[in-house]
Image (cartoon, rainbow, N blue to C red; front, top):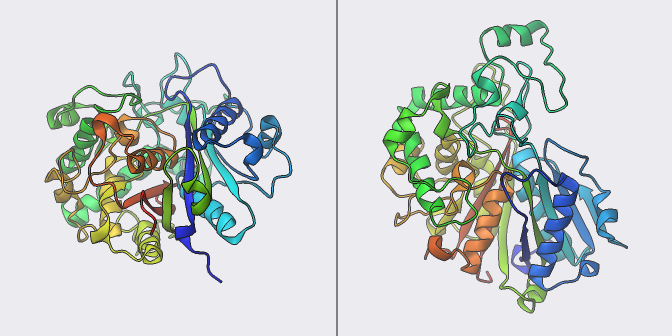
Length: 423
């Protein structure tokens, strides 16, 4: 019998310090986040019988050994989940399936990473060899201090200190400067612009809207006002992407606890019901005739999640979109059906995504202005909004929240439909 998505809910949320956090390893941060999430739900660690671990790209090993660090015993579900930026949605989906099937009763899903290094430009930690597909689906090119990405200068050593090695066609790519995540997303953005007439100013409208939301978020790394002129004046990283088109670099950890909706209703915090989920993995290889840059896995994952939830795009009142770049927000909204193809840019420019707009998007500031925790950034903000905990940034239209995760270079996508209400 298919599991009922309405019978699973997020009962706990744990966030460590986020941003310039240099004194803890990913494992230590992950353990802290799981403890915070369990306490938020009003559960003891011993109440957890499932743990799903989503590692980042840097620092000490984050694997199933986390269970031992936490002192968890007799787990019924333990695994590492890595769909890169789509990991959060994939982990919550598996956790929901576990609790609805009875194979587990309370599952923690956690992400931790520490790519940011003290006294090191933020983008340097994302140095790439030519043609490589950086897993995190975002160069995290900008930082609180406005540091540059790996794409902006000569190739740097990777996190382990090794120099990139270029051979064959990878060397050809390097010769043309195509050697970073930003370069690959710039290609996708440029193709969207060429096909649909999308403009840099329309991408900039996404950044301006999200900075306006971030102003009300005390956790946001960037809260100063941002204008479209500021966006246009920010330096190029890889054309057509400016510095302010690119996401942050952050250290930290976020965890959620998924349990049955009936059980969650009796716990410490209001449950956030999981109405639906979906995934999409298009597998574009950049060959001639592909839809790279024009259509993403959101076109499969979004409709699947909405069909499971029994809703359409018109029923969604808020979106928390994976925003490694401003372009990603535009193309995801199109693929989800909030506007026709090619009209995502005009939708952003209309002010619809900003505070007071008709479709609140990334109400905490997103990864562009708040913090970069892969798919756990939009997931955490969805939980905060569904509970009514947004404070100065709380949006009134939080009944049905669509959450996206994007991994690789538009290679993987996950979608969740969440609500404060039982389905």
